[in-house]
Length: 444
Ligand code: GDP
Image 1 (cartoon, rainbow, N blue to C red):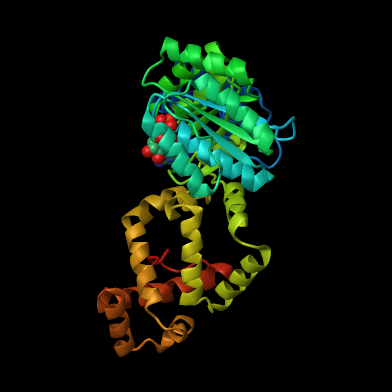
Image 2 (cartoon, helix red, strand yellow):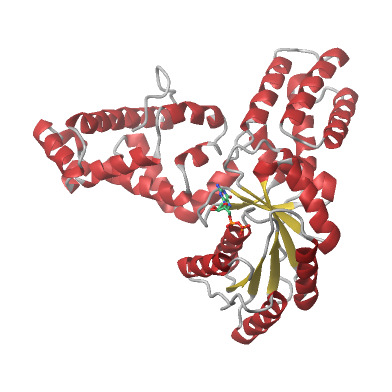
């Protein structure tokens, strides 16, 4: 997320770090680069100007305080202002209000409305034990009803049986009644989109709004479209008065313009971000955490939250002990690998760890690819339990058998065993507080 912006800002701050004292001159110079970095990230120019003015004012007006060096102080000012720019407080849903909670998804075609409706259903069911009901209200593209219906089946969420000969306003009104009758406490209306703003469609959306008075109207925007997303959000807001924004495709190489401008320009907060095509890949938008990620400080909290959904406290402790004693074996490794897959991509996870943002690029070259993960899994699965638990028994004839069984080569099996051994040693050193010599060995 926001990689080039991150890189640019990091290099600006690196220069501040070397300086014991900040002068007006070097603040000016640093801010000039911050300004360029933001403009390059496609942030609205008025927003950039205000941002830089505020940072300058605060940075200059500050007394050198506490344990922070002047450079750190500037980073802190920029961080705090970034948080403000991103919307300040976290702004999710009030799930406690009257039931059912009604949510209308609006936005251009292809922005990710349908996917986000599914993600929200899954998220709110998991986090708040809600009983969701999905309502396809796009009758213009037959595939749209089909898409949401399939998606509902995939996550076991009921879907209103819309058909293309029905009127979208009637669909929504009737679906709401069905939800009330059947006791669903979350109704998600997936409305039609167009490639561009379209007056007739806007009229229809306004009619749906009038018919079901949704508590939330979420504008779904593709983060990759930058400033365009902000302009379209303004139009939707003018007509429908949206309650918040879902920014999708933040896993791609969106430069940050949409996320950083949308609140200042529209006054509406980003509530959720889509981080991948999988239905589990959605996160609540936390401005402070995102600001930290942009400044390369990582986002450990999000990582912990993600992992908490998958690991129990006991398991995590158990795993820690195994790392320390280097008794972590192939069986444990396969279990963790399968978990990781559930959490999303390995690369996505690594980006959340401070300092790892950079490393993922190297790792990318070091080929942590899904395909390779599959191969590794195949090799481990071809081992016997004894071999997984005690990798030291893996002699050549066993390795040959494993290669044949997993459709790989002896060389690939050798490589995996070797890398695994290195990784174990590294983990033991890291967990024991010593840094590994000679940098990170290649992960299997
Ligand atoms: P709609 O036309 O607005 O309903 O958009 P869809 O939900 O059909 O999404 C359009 C495309 O974007 C699909 O291929 C989705 O898989 C993809 N998509 C949606 N959200 C995300 C996301 O957060 N990340 C990525 N990488 N793809 C997404």
